[in-house]
Picture (cartoon, rainbow, N blue to C red):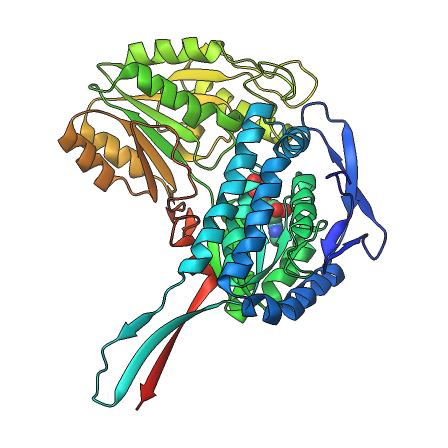
Length: 477
Ligand code: ADP
């Protein structure tokens, strides 16, 4: 059976929308229709939530080892189908095939990690406060949970939530991004093959607002995990408030990338290429503001522009393509707006600078210099292949500029002086800091932000805690 499913997976069954309505999904590289998925809404979401509630007692009653065995099987199936999943992802999302394969491995790594962590949900014993008291803390699954995920990592943003949820003994209903439903449905197909019981993991596609409303307002759902934009995260938090759900929110970023005079410039260029141009600049940890100290500004700008001209823009399935299309025409328009605004306010174009005439939503990898804080690119996340280089001279000043944003997800810097490394690492108001590296994501480390970038952490040993409640037991003996 192929991994391309055009129905939703609810309560262990593949279903059409009750109304029969479907929505067509297009390839962002060609704007051609790939296939369609059900246009579901409130009623189907209620069915998925009921199924999750029904499946919960048996799933949470399994031993951690039993749940881990099923998750391990799911993990293996992802890797066995890595090529098929990657091709599907490239077709619906646009990232080059090699990157898509990398994402499948990354997505699978969360399942493996949390299958392992499931067995290490330890409690506590506390010395009693009175002679006859024995105090314990146990951890229990939160219950029915929900996830709303974005299109930029169609597989990993789901497994980073579903794996800890299922490992902890929770059940989950997922609403994937409207742009990338097929990867989500393929994950459901593989979950079914892995023997994950009906109702434990369901995927509902369709009307984002109706599905989101139900997931947020239904009292059976005890937790919502969301990855996406800050405005939508805030809206979902408001919608979850009346039922006081637990929430994990991984929201927007506006990552600074700082290069100090004593940095290894070649390494900094390499890091910037990854931090800026991976996924065509469409990751929430992408470098958005590149601050370069005056002593190395020209050298860095020159070398970065040289490296960027070597990128190959094109359809992600073609050989040697390093940069795919953006997700849609709005995304292209945003990059253009940021670029036009910067150029109008005095920035210099070093390479790229326009839409590419390749048929879909392509924008040339671009570098601009002489950028300053009056420009839109300083304030908003571009989410595209536009590198904006600011010049600075003073360390305290660049720290202040780097922190001068409502966001606090990822930050990067390159420098070698050990005192500087500590000072800047501690001063940056961000949840994650890459020092002399442009790639920080791994399932073993806590991913998440502060300020308007969100709440909670995913991955790492703490990732499973987000799906667990503590219960304190006080025994009088
Ligand atoms: P992006 O701009 O990257 O698409 P969004 O925050 O708009 O980020 O989308 C992330 C996820 O949130 C997607 O699954 C999208 O369908 C969903 N979403 C957007 N608006 C709402 C809403 N009002 N209610 C529920 N989900 C929503």
